[in-house]
Image (cartoon, rainbow, N blue to C red):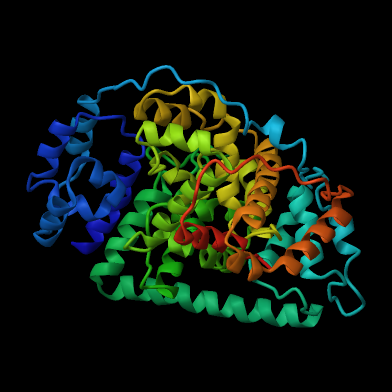
Length: 484
């Protein structure tokens, strides 16, 4: 039962991310029903609080009963009862438009990808990289990776090989990891062949259901010829590999298991790493970064949405005011962006480029939040014209497949520098003193050397429009954590 609710949870959240502004009285009645009670813990507090007082929420949560009902009727009822209260004519604000911000802050992105010949020249006689991890990260961050080189370089970035390993050490690592993978793969295959284990069986069911729907428009995942109709999964060799990877990850991290969205993260890696064992271990390395997104209590997602909310509040307060006026500060419109790291917002090949930029950002390990801020900034003028929650959601949801990854990266870099300038100038002195300023300056110098672009411009700051609490400054200080 718990696994079924876990499976439903992401459907609930996905539906809520598309829900428009709704009639409170009707929705409150729906939330009070026995039918809705099992799903209240799956709905973020910010969304629940729109409809229920805290005492009502607490009473319902304490009286939580398990159920197997699907939430489609509930979501349909919400959408059927939507309304659009207007906020009136809003004065157009241009103070935080990108054209204004970039006058005094410059992105390091050059568009010069790391090429295979360049990469091969970095090894000494023992097969050890002569460039440091910091140097390689800076090069990738400034231009991405040549598609044909991803097979090799992803294995370093995602932890398959240590950056300091020799050629001989890598050979031994590959042998060991192949052996470990075969043992993990056999462990769940043997269990399923001998007897049925409840949780494992349910996870296999969810994986099989998701795998056959993953990236079916990508040629790599097409079925063999003459596979029949409908063809079984066994006739899709690469989908079968995807299933193996996801099931084996379930055995490696049984507590986390499989959650919807993981197949979206694994499929691009498989197209870059055709050796199944290598793809698996790189996916495991990716999941070390992404695991907070799939925690059952959703604390990881709540933290990121909160950090994004505070970023908007600090860097673009006029946009934050718009979000407040339209009840959009929960940023649920960005839920899918963060859950699967923009996988469904960009074209399949583009997402690989975007991910490698995020993985290697030397400035912050939270660069994906600045990408999200950049996309919102890209649509800033249209968002500023929205007068209701449903209009904000429609504007954001309509962006899928229409966003420029290069422009998003450039904007995100500039917005990071805006954030840093505001924090250093206006943040509490005790927090500013404890920031890794020397490390940040070193990363800046390395990026400037790599890109040939100097960011040491005269810092020009607008007056801070909002007063943040100490707790809010503390939450924002976490965004200075580095990938290095």
